[in-house]
Image (cartoon, rainbow, N blue to C red; front, side):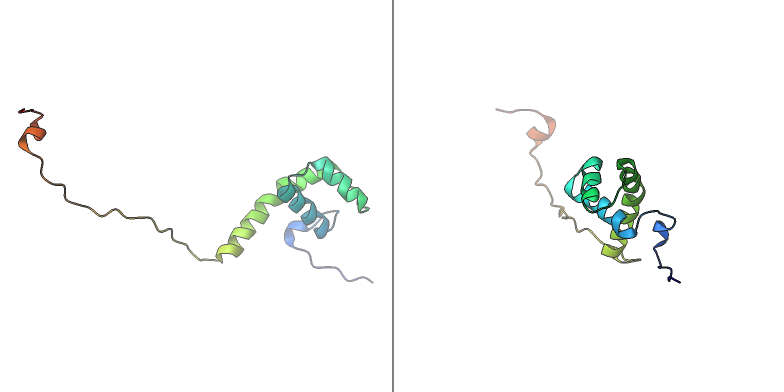
Length: 106
């Protein structure tokens, strides 16, 4: 009897293997390939898949991959700060009365 492989919960009940799904989604995002180009590339490797299936994978898995990447890049519960330049307040030299009132005494 074969041992059941432990799969990530997002890949449960999928016909294709995890590696195929991740590979297609990664190539689609990284190299800007069309779905039909990916179908041809998978066919060269002996995997018959429809372009609509790849489209569904992209729609389903890209947000999840992005969420997991952000969590792993920042670490769970971590925060980050953005340092912004702070302008120091300077006192302006007092204006002459002619400038203040708009009068010109020349």
